[in-house]
Image 1 (cartoon, rainbow, N blue to C red):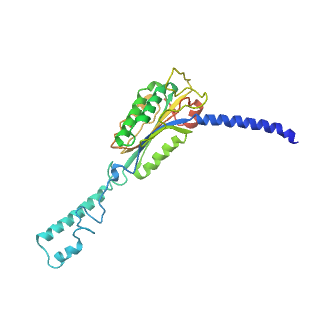
Image 2 (image 1 turned 90 degrees about the horizontal axis):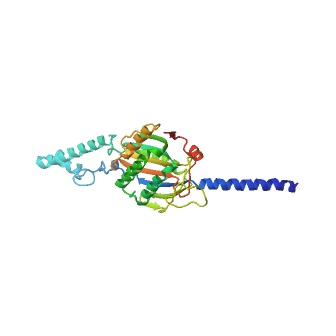
Image 3 (image 1 turned 90 degrees about the vertical axis):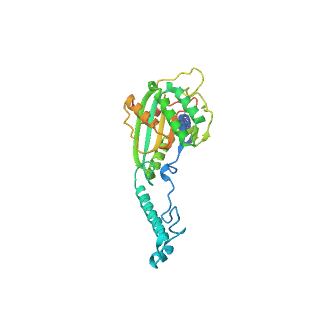
Length: 311
């Protein structure tokens, strides 16, 4: 009985080993690059304002003159110019407190504790022949200043320009944007960014907040394609792709069009690229594949990017 089961068991084990080895190879082929940084907690709208218990001049609460000092003047016959000056200081404090409270209710960029923030995601699927664009993104990751608002705005502009310069390679596109308060915008931004990063088996090149990981594009072991190599006259096939994703958080309102044609994709890229450093809160630029020898097939596109539309 045992001998009869031995042969089928051996065949099953061999098939399982071959299957999982192939799956491992497919997973390893999804490398990704990442550039970005920023923070929703350090936005211009989170500027310091004096606490209600103390004015800038120190006339109320724990510092300077307070109500106990005013009582002798107004309650026990005090008066004159000095009392008038103190009264004017108190009136100024009340006026400034009311104006500050009104300002916190405004829903404009740079004001209030929870201003309007836009979170946008734009994805472009390119034909694999656009491997020069991958080289541009690699160089950006290796040299970009992602630790400053101006540097991140420059990276976003350069990435959108690189995509705009290669319309002949556009194959797919998708865009969406949401307007929300500051408190919920960070969660939405992280949700979209993490969803894209989870599609990578490994982030082989990353520059986030000036933390560079993987300064040289690695090569995958084995013969798994020739998509990302920067040297030599390599060939690609028509069913290999590159996907670039831009996730942006910005003060104010920004509306991206529905991408269903080259013209709408061009409009979406131009709008994101025009965001200035004063409005840009955070940005993530992600692309796959990144490692030399990696490929992204049609099956990968269908499995991991079902929302992309032909353009």
